[in-house]
Length: 354
Ligand code: KG4
Ligand code: ZN
Image (cartoon, rainbow, N blue to C red; front, side):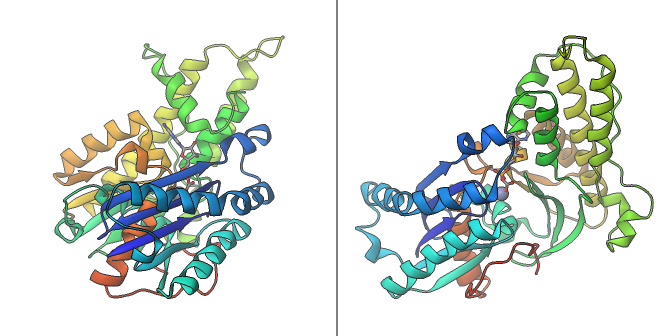
């Protein structure tokens, strides 16, 4: 079954054609990073305008690429359209959803609405022979610019959030720190790069992302499985103020980045290790842009080894937002799980499991 997927929830306009859930025939991503860079973060109005401008070209490019590969002859070989309905920026989501509806209607094929976070957890299965069901029950970890969530997956297609950040997501914590340090946007890759330059072991002591007592319970969550990165950000701000020179220059950027990254990685690794003790899992499935982080990948490998579970990470090209994960998951939603909701509208805040 050939599914064309569309993703436009944030600042990537993406389209992909995927066969049978894992065979990626094309994967086109137009990144808007350069448009948002001057603002130090994603501006929803700029994002939705850029989606409108780019979406047709991105869809055509994805179809052309799939045709070149010889697996399909054209759009008429597409069996269904998959699209992200949430969570994300509403004006941005609407662009993808409208394009998907138009395409599905004109081709006379079904449309499948996909949850973006759930799709991030499908990425390790792209271009892989691994059968998702064989890795269940799994602990899912979604770490991106908008989310840091621990998800209990008793079987493929069934999700329950058991922990999450109570304020900033991990990616957001990286992005805000980079802005504060004058390192540009997005922050994750540049902090990762700067941190590698530090070869010492004299790390600055930053808080390890523990939520304030009582705050997790208010959200109906277990504090042991939650993070809070807002205190970490304030602590970085205070540190920078204390060391900034008269000329405004910040000394020891690599050491600051390594210490800050270490605090984020330690807190994610710690909550993951705790979650893995909560039931007998077979695997730890990780997805999202922050899973590109070298130190995090290493820490999670240790956590998985100690818990004796398989670690499933995605290929770097599928860590960030893309549409292959949307089209891939749609196949399982429709053919394996037997649930393919028609996405009649977008949803800015739907979490996995809703
Ligand atoms: O999954 P993604 O592309 O978009 C969302 O769904 O949010 O994730 C983007 C986030 C950004 O916050 C970015 O700074 C972060 O992923 N990121 C990283 C790295 N590469 C991207 N964070 C840490 N280390 C990296 N190497
Ligand atoms: Zn994402």
